[in-house]
Image (tube, rainbow, N blue to C red; front, side, top):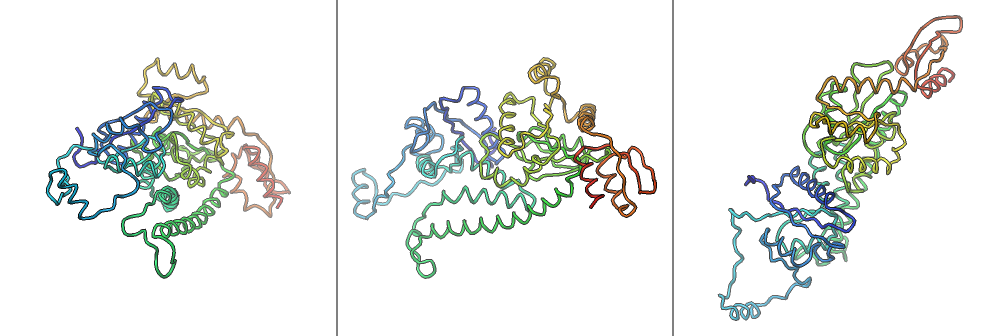
Length: 452
């Protein structure tokens, strides 16, 4: 039953010629989860097949009236030019309709079951949004607006809040509209500008300030990543709600947030693989992806996504129980390709196998090969096997070489133990002789440090 304390929402989707029925249904189901995450009760869905979104209000006239019946609106887009009001005109309308002179607006019915929010599964223009609101009498959000709002609510760290605020302001700026009584020109400072123009200028200035602050944080984050450069790093990447945080907790023993929500994790968490290995392997949990992820959010979270770009190994985490997991995997790959991380070595991990039967599990392995891993983050044996796969993957890329640490550089021996596995340690007249096993790049950097 709908929760009377939660706003009711209607989903709106237009099925375009290049989208089949299954994909269209999956997109609307995902939009419903987004709306629920934002705190709405989804009570109805209105869809229409069209060659393109209607320029005025997304839907055609008939479907627009169907939508308005669910929200209590009139179902028509009124003329853009407001009708000039006068007492004579109001009296003439009242007399012609046999109504009293004063016609009061009806009071909202507190027990009404009408929806108060319309959520559109497309990115729409400011004019389409305004026209939909006028035709339906409801608040209208497009897909981008919903995602930005969810990010805004879930951001916890200072960096994530800055990133989301930049994306939110970039989304809001072109959708500002004049309000009654504020379209007049301003006097004094900024004379000649309308209130909306001043608001837009303030938003641009605020975005510039936020970017400067984010740049300083990104520089600090970059210094920390530089300090971890010699260490083995695994980044968990994938669609939102694929179970990355659950897998992170299982692999590292960390107390990261685990919720069955879209975009529950926006902040990058870095922890050591447990039990610890030599050299130590770091695991990072990254922000989840989603279809039609707004470009402003991708750009704002670029510093966070750099964790994937600079990782030694990526784990593509996929919710195997989701019927659209193939499309979700494609979205993940597209975003990683966009930031240049598609060339990083990777392992395909199908999570939530506890929800699959044997036939579904075998079908996944046949489709993706034996290199794919099917597991449940809730099964300790599965996560232990994944841990060993990660260790073995790095082990195959390691080489054994001898390093000599001069007596004048003995302080660097601790760095060697952090960056490589020391097989043996001996001493001669030149210094400490170490037999180490590590990635070739790590050994090269250690040699350079000893010679510097």
